[in-house]
Structures are given as structure tokens and as C-alpha cells.
Image (tube, rainbow, N blue to C red; front, side, top):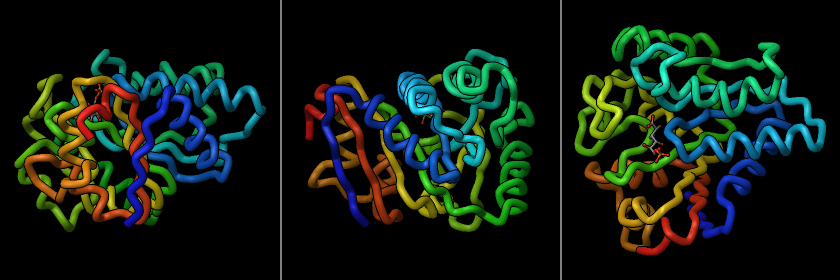
Length: 234
Ligand code: 6PG
């Protein structure tokens, strides 16, 4: 396992550069939700347009989703659609996007995505983006929940979110996260500093109380992109 922590002026731009590499190689790219990645997705669109990159060979998956309709303001798909898919294709849906159908509910939604991953041959994710919550959660794997112990399934239902929005979720499992070629965590702001230190600091160890800390030991390559504020407790 190679863990690299990078403190940069513009984590969104750094993340977009990594995304360009994976998309250019027609890779399987797993998108993260929340608010932080929006800027990275916008930077990615700008970079793709600037170089005239053809990303139609890439496949876009999701790491987790809220159990809301896809046009709900809390939907991770809606955030990606607004910031990445629509601007990239000017409304023409030519990208290969594998949406998590959170509207089915946590368990049916998880079963549906599990089937889709297995029907696709359980692709090795070339790039998997993750965020981290102030509580140390990542994807929708929340502290001390049973979902952290799941080792057979690739996708689980999360009946109770540990942080807002308090709606049920669908999430990739640690097993699925660990199959990725390259995991990139993106975190900004001082509100994440304690969680970042607990997950990626020198004294960090895999701890169910800090789910993000459980990811690096499972992966070949992990990059943590931070701004100064998110890194201030390292
Ligand atoms: C979600 C995300 C979640 C997110 C963190 C950070 O569905 O909420 O997948 O894991 O990455 O909560 O969210 P922010 O970027 O909004 O701080």
C-alpha cells in the first residue's frame, strides 16, 4: 500500500488532473458525492474541453448515493450531472454513466447496483474518488456501523446515515473500495482536519470509528489531496 498525502493550493485542480488521466485511458472512474468534488468536476470539464479529450470510452460509476430521486437537490447523481455530465456533453447523453438508483431504497438500490457491477464483470476501478466527513465517514460508510464488516458484497444499503442529509443511503463496501487501482481522497477546510489526521496521520490505524482510516490498508495506491486547512492537524 502506497499512501501519499499532498497539501496543495488547489486540490480540485489536482484531482481533475488525475481524472483526466483515467478518463483518457477509457478507465472505470468512481465518482464521490457531497459538495467538495463539485469544483473538481468543473475543473475536469474545463481540462477536457481545453485539450479536446474524448472521454466517451470512460465509464463513470458512483461510490454512494442518497436514497432520493435523481433530481433531488441531495442527489449525488444530480450534483455530478450538473457539474460534470451535462457540461461535458452539452446535454447529449453519450457518456457511459452507471447511476446508483437510490430512489429504490437502501436495500433494493444496493441489490440493483450489486447486480450491475457483477453483470459488468466486477470491473477493477481505475480511479476511485472519495471524500471524508468530519466524523471520518467515507462514501456512506459511517462510524461503527455493521456495513464496515461486510466482506462479501460490493454494495450495501445504509438504513441510517450518520451525518446529514439524514436519509438512507446506498454505498460501495470496503471490499469494493479495496479493488481500486488508485484511490484519491479529496478534502478541504478546517472542519475536516481532525478526521483527516485520524484517518491519514502518522499515528493513524484502521479504526471502525474512523471509516476512512480503513481504506488505505486495502488499496495498492492512495492519494490524499488536501488544502492547508484540512491538513492543519497532520
Ligand atoms: C456523500 C459522500 C460523502 C462525502 C463526505 C464529504 O454522499 O455525502 O459520498 O462521503 O464525500 O460526506 O462531503 P462534503 O464534500 O460535502 O464535505
